Image (cartoon, rainbow, N blue to C red):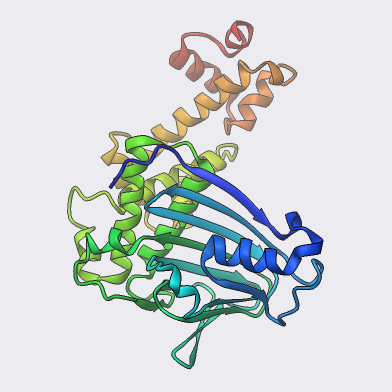
Length: 333
């Protein structure tokens, strides 16, 4: 597999389409060219921008993985026999989150209801319809079939799996979608680290399909599951640094795991939850104190915004870490 240079990110929305050529733009630009599908609103009426909204962010993580996050009105997506002449046999994971429910997959003359929290794993080499009869958010991860056959040589030609909440494979699929979304939003990885992250996505998709592969990810030294989980946990910590009550138990609950498992993930990196939180808070405080745009903020306010509720203790810890007081750091900045 070639090493990806960097993540490419694009925004696609019906708001940018020309009113005069709206119908072909929706079907060709958003549907066929971007996703290899016939894309249309549920009622088939594409005459008005007011009747159909589709806003998506697409992250090309590498030639081996692409991520989609979309918000849309009710929608009908068709992968027809005619469209399959493009030769695409990519496999994609997708999950839909709407106030009313999930989605409907139509394949082989039958409709399968996918509940909220369920995930669909489906091949582009299979004729099918995806129907979302309500406004919703849909996320998806797409990889070439060849990337998975390297891990699963016996993979069927055009797999289709409906992964219900709590069913085998669903946790791995959900982790893959969450991790792909994090990679796409951050956009900071490139080169070998990005190639490693994409390989983790392939491992997780394989685990969603095959129970034996899922079991292999639990073996000591295999970080295909651990690395994405830790990255997501660290992202949550950074998002919540300003909470004085940020605790190990709170983060474990947020990620549907146990405090012991969270500590194990950090221990593999040679650190601990509390050490990571402390260092992240210190680095944020240093960044705020040395930023010219933040000079109007008092040291007390910076400390509180970084989650420190004991100001003298913050000052002592800051001096131990950086060899200067918070006020000295501000002057140096």
